[in-house]
Image 1 (cartoon, helix red, strand yellow):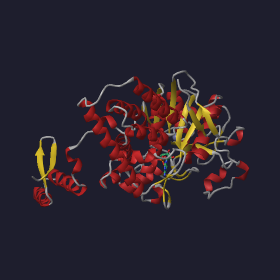
Image 2 (cartoon, rainbow, N blue to C red; image 1 turned 90 degrees about the vertical axis):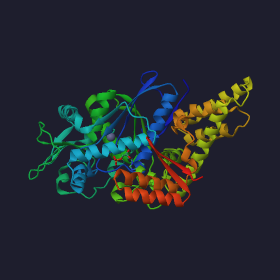
Image 3 (tube, rainbow, N blue to C red; image 1 turned 60 degrees about the vertical axis):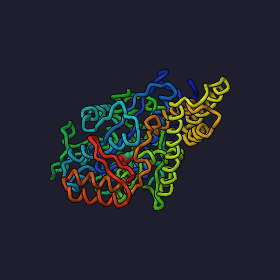
Length: 475
Ligand code: AMP
Ligand code: ZN
């Protein structure tokens, strides 16, 4: 197997990847809190994790990939304070928390599919794993790592000596944040909740019985409990966005290792943020972009994926419409070349491969593999792909095979690229066609006819077919 190098946040440097068991690895990625849409910033992190997984698969590894769905217990402040994000979301939208979770989980998973993200071996919901979380807290309690306050069960971070290693936290320099009364019972500023009690005066929609009282789990405990259940006490790779380093992941390490006495994870990888001119894209700001918003503006979700490929996952990426347009146009050019190569291959236009070509092909493969194995240097991999596209000396069939091979990592859906009948139809016409379809669906046939007439005026025709519509230029 080729060597793989990854920047390991825990080691604070790039390291060679050595799996625990030869030829396979376990990989846990922190998933969404399903109280709202995941914005395209969140999705940048899942694209990075997908590239990582695809790179391992490309190198011949078997990957056991787990992603959680946080549907309980994540408070509006990560410091165990404020309200539960799920309960707040539910009252905002007039849904139960269960309905809210189902609604946003569904949209999130559909978005990952639209972005060509390989589905994990298992999506694990926090609410399906309450006994496992209670079990882990009991283990910590039995070993003396917990204490109880008036609002919950807390982990005592002073009981372990390497707390904060991941984030290189300077604990003595930490200042208390804005705290509310209850958390003043915390013994150390870095202590965090494992179990929170339900308020005495209010019934929560999501709450469970436990030996400590009715309540719900803290946010961090779910990931430790589910990761260990599906991947074992000690596994290979754990990922998330950089915001998870000082709190969530630091706490996951503390509680997991305190219970098992073993090292939790060998390689920690973190994706940098998608940012806007005004700063990081975030849900708390209220305005953010979703995959659907991009589609509504006429973009293919994979235009966005292509945009993400150009910047290493560890570097911040600035979102702008100009960047997205540039990605769209490069990706469209790539698809057009793929269509051309497909045609030439199908028509057997060219001569057969010569041994000389074999060497060139192997050279390209080697370059691509080295690039993606070097801490996921996807932009260099993409540059190799373009070299292949532009190499007119190489037969189309060979170029196509190389592109398909590289696409196992890039995930741009190149095999599925087809010449579409409506390829040259202007976007405004396609928008009208969509509007007409929606009007027909709503049985507003008057409106549908008006739109058809408008499209005709603009020089295009709609032909209704059994499985959709065909749009063409009027003859
Ligand atoms: P959340 O639903 O807030 O737990 O976030 C889901 C994932 O998206 C986490 O791994 C976060 O670290 C990540 N994330 C949040 N904001 C951004 C952003 N602007 N760019 C990239 N990743 C983000
Ligand atoms: Zn997590």
